[in-house]
Length: 138
Image 1 (tube, helix red, strand yellow):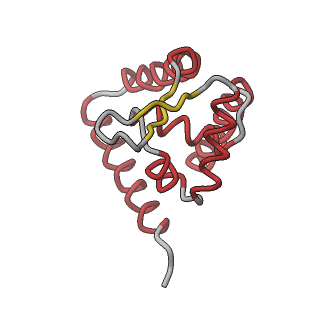
Image 2 (cartoon, helix red, strand yellow):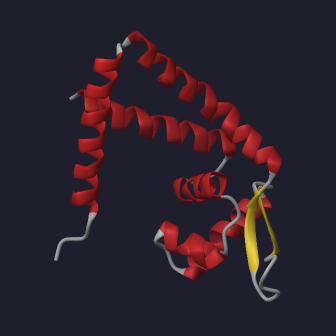
């Protein structure tokens, strides 16, 4: 039940962050990829989001209109473009995310090395289980 509560509160956090940035869940997901990975081509962003290239163009257009991203020429492909998060939006998102991350990290200070190892093993197994069940069934 606690794992379910963690997943629910994670969803709540993402909804709140999306509302603060005035973006929908798909746009927030796109921003997460761009913040974590750096500039991406529209086709790579489309692949990561699991949506069509037309849908990705719409996402990029919305994020551009809000000032969250910009398109820039690809440095090694003169015909290509990359999508880049603006520094203002990165700072705004990270200003909300980092205190939460630091708080979660500080919780581990309450545990000794043995307990932290047990927590890490548990989370690794849960992540692997989720990955296994996230695969499409045949």
